[in-house]
Length: 70
Image (cartoon, rainbow, N blue to C red; front, side, top):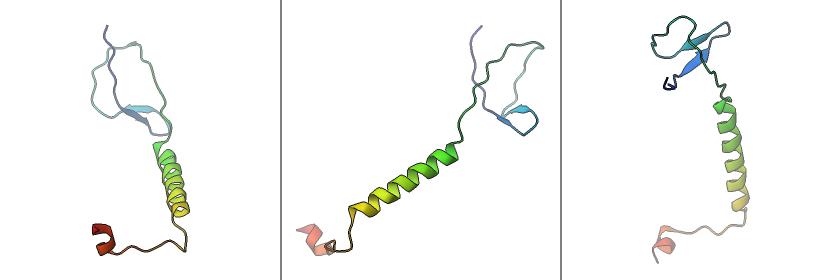
């Protein structure tokens, strides 16, 4: 039997498929729980902002558009 991946979510009481799927009773399932991606994204954005802030000091030279073209 081929394996099929179907997006689903947990509503606090039960697992719900995000799309309609036709399953026979007693069909075996394999459930994979994904980490909360929002927290990973926030952690990445915070790290990126810190790295960017560390890259430019208050005494950083300001370049004009003319400086960039030359």
